[in-house]
Amino acid sequence: MLRKLIPFAFGIILISNVAFADAGQERKDLGVFNDVSKAVTRYTQFTIFDNVDVAVKDGMVTLTGDVTMPYKRDEIEKRVARVDGVHQVSNQIKVLPVSQSDDQLRYRIARAIYDNPNFWNYAIGPNPPIHIIVEHGRVTLAGVVNNNTDRVIARSLAHQFPAMSVKNDLKTDAEVRDLLETIK
Image (cartoon, rainbow, N blue to C red; front, side, top):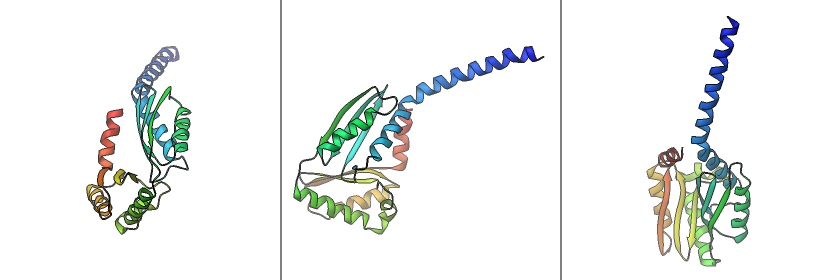
């Protein structure tokens, strides 16, 4: 009886290993994406005034977005290159120009958003999810909010300051989940 079970058990183990290998291939980009995202958001110099987007395709990582200082761009690229599964990094992160008026606008909008009671729960984490990008007086809100109401309120709070324009690129949790499903 035992001799009959050994080939059967070996066959089951072999089939399950093949199934896991196939699932690993399908989920490889998602796993790399998650690890790269963690590497970026856990970078201690990454603030609410920086925004980095990540795209992964077969181990090739493309970084886009904006940071406030050149060293951040370089250090983020180095951190991402060390992530397991990353074969190549295309760093297209743009460094925002130095501007006192842009800095003042960033701080005023950040204060308005994160001091608002609707956003207190967003502000308590080590890396708040709403990012405020300002370039030449043009504001872009990026990141993730819980729902569409929060997205609208954040935009209206940013609009109360003298900005050339306000672009709302905030996404809801549901929209982010849908986007992650396409990576699988």
